Figure 1 (tube, one colour):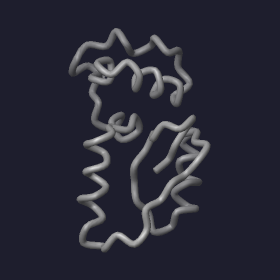
Figure 2 (tube, rainbow, N blue to C red):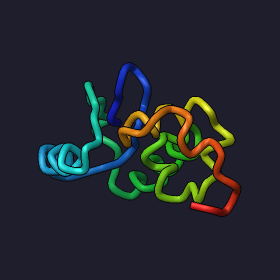
Figure 3 (tube, rainbow, N blue to C red):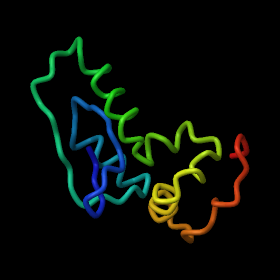
Length: 99
């Protein structure tokens, strides 16, 4: 989990955590802390990751499939815009289905 100001921004998995964190930094995805769950059997990792994404809808995970629907979640819209370096209100006027 990548967190910023105590909020979960991304749920993912990696075998090479330092490389993955570096990739997020290159993508200008700020985070101030990392949390991990270890010891999950390989056969369960994908399902558990997807369950956390469905439950929390972290903005970076949602961003890849949001297609403009993030405007329905103002807190996440504001956080996603902050992470993208945009004004808080930008994107709020998007219409569903319009990226």
